[in-house]
Image (tube, rainbow, N blue to C red; front, side):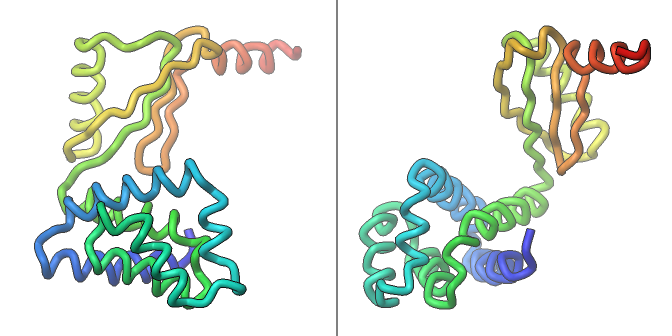
Amino acid sequence: MRQISKEYASALFAIAEEKDCVRGWADVLAEIDGILRDEPRYLDLLASPEIPPEERKTLLKQSFGGIAEDEIINFASLMCRRGHAKLLPEAIAHYRRLADIRARTRVANVVSAVPLTEEEKKRLTAALEKRSGMKVTLSCAVDASLMGGMVVEMDGRVTDGSVRTRLREIKEVIGG
């Protein structure tokens, strides 16, 4: 992650702390991030030097004014005006990490070969919370190509306990 996106996110985070709305803004930023991921051309538009800065701010207000506070619109507008529109997703991700740290919460992305039962989710959550010392929320997905087991990513660390990976490792050991 680039330092510049961290600086913008940290500044927005400081404002959110002053206003006591860190978690609420994290939720709004998550929604904006989803929109930006669904419409990648929108970032191209915001980054375009042909569009005057005031027009970009107007676009941001039209797009996100119904869900985002003025401070978030101003944050995005400032990044655009300074030529950093393409770094908005990075800045949002960093802000959300700061909010999670403040709340002592982590998100674990879990991909399993079959859907996890509620009991398996509870046991996995408990194990991850014990290991991290923080509250953990699971984000679960299914990928049948794993054949069995699961892959867990949390805090940039990946634990791959999938059957697919184990079979590949065995194949490498026996020289195939």
